[in-house]
Image 1 (tube, rainbow, N blue to C red):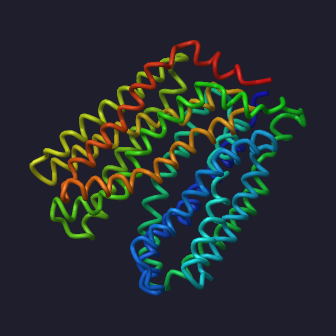
Image 2 (image 1 turned 180 degrees about the vertical axis):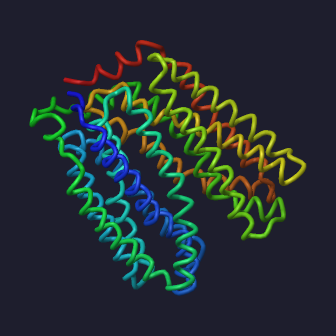
Image 3 (image 1 turned 45 degrees about the horizontal axis):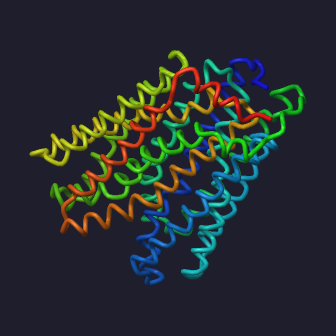
Length: 405
């Protein structure tokens, strides 16, 4: 059951809407790291309590990757996306109404439940709209949206919190979600429109869980996400504490590595539509190797400029590894794609739970040195290399399709 032949206008509208919705997703999600500065003062929260507010979101977000992917396969992308946007927009607004530490924990957990279905559902929406030979580039656009959204969220949140307060910021972001809800409801095709009201095959969640390829993709994405979440959490303090930069400057120079990551994402997403089946693993191995080498030289860089250059190179390498995000769209049957993407994103979100805490512990263990943290990330990037060695050419496609019942 493959995507129907939509015209260029429909494809452009769908891709644009999903791109912008991903940015709104990141506005709601990443703005908490900025708002937490004011929230901590208002409610006299300890650093541990502040961390619990953020972790409550990631816990729910990770759990819903698995559940949301399955429901997307069963009911179609549009209905799951609409439900996801409704729930996360409601609880974004409720975040602005929070009255205590406990209420924040509950609200952000429910917010994570809302957002958790969106990654898998957006991938399936691409598969329902684009033919296979165009899905890699389309997914690359959405991957770029996550990087752009992260930058926009931090900059915009800082301005809004300073000018109007954190509560009003969440009210506005929540209202923005409802605007996109209406646009998605009107313009996003349903599964019936994509497949002429045809019924899909029965979804076998157990068969997907038994498929080694799904778990291989999850491990690759886990290793890649360890670097992304680890660096995003600790890179600002690295620039300040190790390299002696002012805090404002760290925000500006942090854009350069992200830009290099976008280049890697663009190259890998273009390549995935051109490469023969089973050859994608060489891009993953190359990107991970570049990242490991660049992180090693970052540890020993003699100047800020050299350290920044090395980090830009590392981000570029990780951007190449992001080709893994396109593989379910290329290989898995449409009726199991959401479940597979959900499993893969579950690995990424677990990295988001693990990396910041373990890196912080490592920095403490090494008496403030970040060398141990960089070695941890180098070890994480070895996971995609090792796992990719077991991705065997034509058997990849066969393994992906073996989950249908």
